[in-house]
Structure formats: C-alpha cells, structure tokens
Length: 298
Length: 298
Image (cartoon, rainbow over all chains, first blue to last red; front, side, top):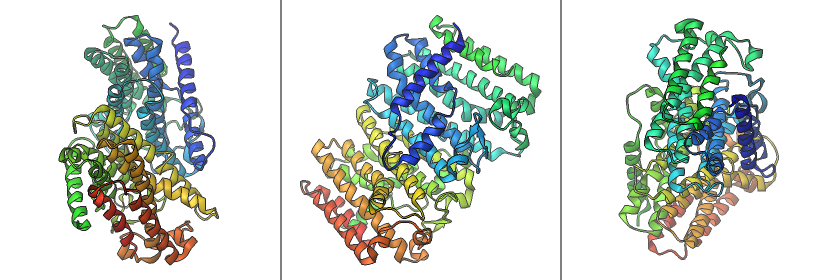
C-alpha cells in the first residue's frame, strides 16, 4: 500500500465529513462559526481522525464501520483544532503562524479565538453525543466519549499543556518531559486509536495492543515535532521554527542532541509496529503511518 | 417550604458531590488541578446543579433519582465555572473580582486560567460519561450529554458570549439582546432543567414544560443580573458594578430603565411558574426558585 495515497484518501473523507457536520452559514452566531471554521479548515493533516479510522480498519474492515465512525473521527479533529487555537494564544505560545497561515487570534482577535476554541471543544462533544449522525449504539458512544474526554482533559492534553507552560525556563528532570509529551500530545493520539478500536468492536486484548501502538506513535510524533522545531526553517515548518529553544522549552534535542533524538524516534516507531504483531494486513495502514511519522524528521 | 433552607441543603449536597469527584491532590498536574479547584470552590450559588436536581424532584421524588443525578449536577457546575473563568479573562470582560474574590487569571496568570477553564469544561464531559459514578443508563447519559453540549456550545452559551463580546460598543436591535440572553445565560439554565427531567424519566410533555420554565427563569436571571450590575455597588455584588455601562454593553436597563426592567423580570418569573401548572407540589422548589431569582433584584 502507498501511505501517501491512503492518507490523502482518508483526509478527503474526513474533510467531507467535517463539511457535512459543519455549522450553518447563517444565523446570529455567524462570526463565531466563521472563526471556528477558519481553524478547522486551515490545512490540518487530520492525523487523529485518520488514526481513529485506521485503527477501526485494523479490527474490522467493513465499510459500515468506517462510515459509522466518521463523526467520531471528525469530533477528534474539532477537539485537536481547539487545542491548537488555544496553544497559539498570546498568553500561551504566542504564535502568529500555524500551518503557514495566520493563527486564529491574529485574524479574529484574542476573545474570539478563545471562544472559537471553546466552541470547537464543546461542539466535538455535541457531535459525539448526536445519535442522528450515525447508528453507533449508546453504549459504544458513551465509552468513546469517556475515552476522549479523559484523553483531552485535565489528566491528559490540557493537564500536559498546563505542565508544559508552567515548566518553561525551568530545570526539570527528564521524567517531567516524558509526562508532558505523554499527556499533551500522546493522550489524544492514543485516545483516537482507542476510540477507533471501541467503535469497531475490538476485543479487550486488541484494545490494549492498540493503546500501546498509540502511546508509541504519540511519543514518536512529539519527538519528531521537537526535532523539526530545532532543525527546520520557519518556511519549511509553516510555523515559527526554533521557538522552543528561544522560549527555553524542554525538548528531546536539548537532552539527546539531534542524532540521539532521531534514534529515540526510531525506537518508538519500532515499538509501535511491534505492538501490532497479532494483527493481520488490515493493520498495514497503521504500520505505514508509524513509519511515515518518522520520515517527517528526515 | 423555605427556599433558603432548600437552597442551602441542596448546595451542600452539590458541594459534597464535587468534593467526592474532585481531582487528586498529588501527581504531575497538581498546579492545574489547584487552579480548577480554586474557581470551582470560590463561593458559587450552585444555581444550575440545584435546578437540575429540583427539576428531577418535580418529576420523581425518589432519593435514588437525586443520588443518581448528582454527578450530572456537578458536571453542570464544572461547565458553568469554566465559562466564568473564561469570561473574566483580560481579553474578554477583564474582571479582577468574582464573588468577592480574585478571578482565576489574577491569581494564576492568563495561560493557567485559560487552561483551568478548558480543563473544567472537558472534565465536565468526563464526569457525564463516567459510568462508574452512577447507575444512570447509557441512553439517559447520552441524551443528557447531547442536551448539555448543545446548550453550552456554539449554538448556546459560547455562541452567545461571542455575540455579546462582538456587539460591545455597537448599536443593535433589541432582538439581538434577546438572542444574547437566551444563548449566553438561558441555554445552560434550560439545559440544566432539561437534563434533570431526562434523568428522572420525565414524559415528553413534562420535558417541554420544564424547558419553557427554564427559558423563562433564564431570562429572569439575566435581566436581574443586568439590573444588579446597574444598581448595586461593587461591594454588594462581589464583582465590578457598573461595568456593563462603562463597557457600552447592551443591557435591559439601557432599553427599559430600572423600573421597566424590574417589570420584565417579574413577567418572566410569572411565565416560569405558569409553565408548571400541570405539576403537583413536588415542583414547589422550582416555583420558589423562580420567585427567589426575582427577589435578588430588590
């Protein structure tokens, strides 16, 4: 299989799903909806929704499973996008560029951007609980909501971002950097894979293997992100390069150097693929995705 | 029944529920948890959770129903608290005081306050989907999550706040002020009553009546809030008084004057009580709550 074609096909499916679920283009909240829509369609790679769909595919190849899970995949993208909008705010990372385009607050102002993020997060849970958008059972939806809210919340993504912001310009042990990575980036990636497995009726054993896969690629993803921030130009990256070092943020390259960091990423990718040894070739997209994450660093 | 005793008793039940559900006092995210906890226990009146429990009581008086709905009531308070933390931010209303105490960002800084809000919102959905905290059925939980996410999200509370912020210092028709009130404040109040009805197995007809009740007291609540902002001192209010006028915010007193506004509040309260005519005396707390909201303005 060709991973680039796969990613492109799935990306289109997710973006069509998002457009279908999209808020109307009229009514009193038009400006708010526009700010939400702007960041949602500002060129994301759709990694989390694709991971969700690919994890479901690894367990159950039926077209119905993919179709039924599409709203869940879209909700994950809403929640991920909210986190980017808030991370970019002046009070947080203060970034003007994201994916080569103006960040939300640069375009709409700080208040509207905070609210666009709040709207995207809450709307994610609206999609997840809206029984009219897919025939997923109530039990399955509820289990998925629990997984995603735990992953995105104070024990996961938000907690990690708070720890990251609170640790800037301070010395802390390597274990803290690992906690930041695992929660800030890893939790929602693992949550995406976990949700896909739940939606496809994975066994408990399969869920555990998918979660290990998620943890490992989440780690690889964040390591590669650190690496790109340290070694790329702003033009290549579409966002401010070198910003981690200038803000005194803890990163893998700061601990292990560029080559050592690359090695750590490769180990994580190998671990992810190893976790899938009991899966058949329906899990090939997940395997290819793990390798693809590493190639971003080269 | 004595409404003050009722409110006090229910408030204690909600606060004990929140303490039970509370995040641990150790682990890597301690500072984040502390910022969340600060605003959650900064002296709120717990109106939304109490409305949820009182609506359930109006339908089904059993102690089990109250107990099973307590996590839902607590989640409503988390979501309400997040909205206050974000509304107070420098980029929004820029308030230093809330309930007579420092606002979250004054104490913890802007970044931590944004994240405390994000954490409280997401944690609200965690509580709502956590099947270990109450025997509520999956169908019921899901219906409640849908009602609350719709009420709190871009079509409701967040959309209303965005419209409010976007309308400052501009002339707009009275219908826009109504839309702001209905969405920013009214939606989550109606959602609280609606969720309570769902949790207590209310009939479709009862749900409709409870929703009208919610809409009317939501309106009364916001009118009274406008009135207090215009007529009280900062000391009486525990937050900056007169701030609406100085920020050029649209309010009821700006349209109808103080006496006319008081009259509008009374009409809304009467409408709320009228919506409950098919309910027996188990709905007396809801009726008393409606009257109590009005007395705040005197």
